Length: 116
Image (tube, rainbow, N blue to C red; front, side, top):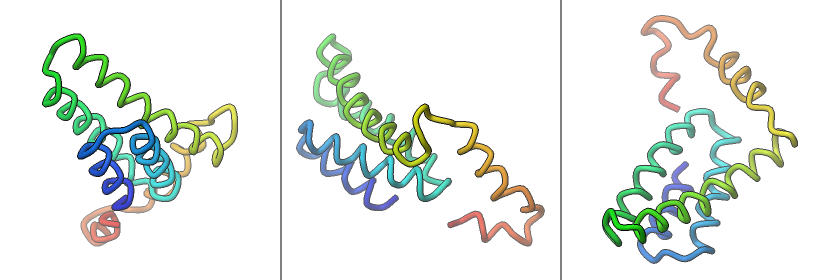
């Protein structure tokens, strides 16, 4: 998760298609290795939105920039997930494994486990 965040930070500092794609690949790897990496998806979208707004505002160019950046980050992530979980993608498998992992966690005695 840290590597994916670092790659996104580099892509935002100096945007390029290659850096955005590498951030997407790192995001995909984080998503298939750790279920709590789901928190990265909305945070990546928000950070890319802030970057697009900062660079071009709410103009047409800003919206095009945001869509392009979202595409170049989330498409490689989806390809990594499809490569690991199979094609066609089976989101049910991911959700079922997530539910199985946290099914028996009850009360505060196991809350430390949820931190990673």
